[in-house]
Length: 135
Image (cartoon, rainbow, N blue to C red; front, side):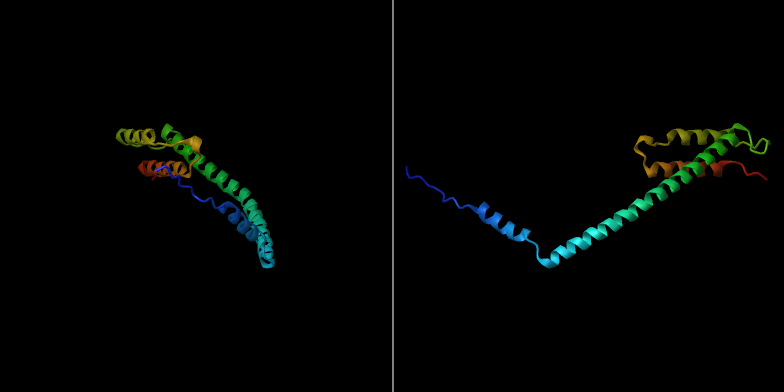
């Protein structure tokens, strides 16, 4: 019972490190591949940098469009028109529904989510549909 069982210590970490050292030495063809990947990576990076101003311009135009739609609709619902005429307002029941839709809309502006812009755009479309036609 008193016999001690001793496990022979094999040093696998030395064997693994020797194998890793062999793997680290790249073959001549691999260095050319790495250089080509770096070159392609730089090209992709440059193209992405070119997209930044495009994204900013599109975003600015989209925000300006939505802001203009909101302002125009607000003026119409206030009873004012851009041409000095007073527009026809929807019925009280329709206006109450519009107000409920606006208050029920859930957005998180601090997160900067595209889906929030889509919700606002959908709300604007819904409100425009409920406005009386100008005939």
